[in-house]
View 1 (cartoon, rainbow, N blue to C red):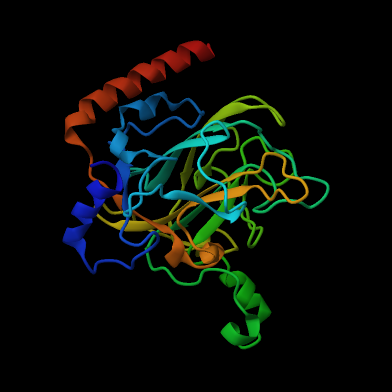
View 2 (cartoon, helix red, strand yellow; view 1 turned 90 degrees about the vertical axis):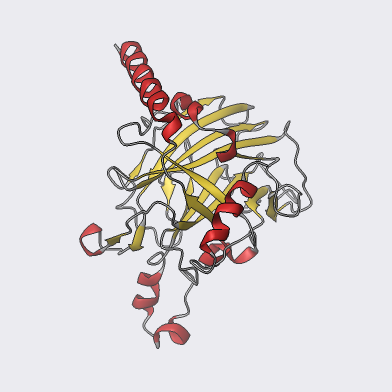
Length: 316
């Protein structure tokens, strides 16, 4: 059996080690890059081809009940999977050497939407994005949307600064044309972590198509895991140490708008996440940080070196 069921068997050995996330009983796999083979952030997914299918999440990946895990949880919630409308392949990975989380996106859309509509229609940011979130220490709980009076005794500044401290969520919009940052930290608008070495990159994508047309987007991203994200910058933030065998919480929520107008609200797909995913890290999905696959170490290194030389020659 593929994907989540492979992980569930492993995670059974770790019962009680971490707080459960959504969907209940499902744990996906995060590939570990052997040291020195981490991908170049350019949207060329060649380096990812070595990764087995067990690590791929797509429109047909099953949840524990056997039905597709990826469903529309906001917007047109009656919409069902239609690969001619929207399809996705996603892989989560990590590196012990760089202490970064990596993601691969391979996305088809029959109508690419990179602009916000003029009639305020639609959900979820109102244009095509990948809404991603990271709960690196797997602590769950509320991470945004605090009530200043109830949670901080009336201290509005403390309530604001708590947004994104324990876990983070953001809309990644490669090629977006609405003037917002490529990684829009919409809950607090603090963007010091949007550039290397903290995250990458605004231009790490290849898009065949443009606003209003059909096309594919291949993209790569890396993110820094935080135990505590401070709005003032890295000096007061605490980086989380990724550890083999640990479970992290991760939000995967692709948004497909199709230039929604009127009653068409677009679609935000999630891995069965409830509506509180915007401020509750317990609604993120569990991913197990896998060990290096020793049987593929040599092949990964050879492929990484080969593609590196090919890319360099093309660049010249």
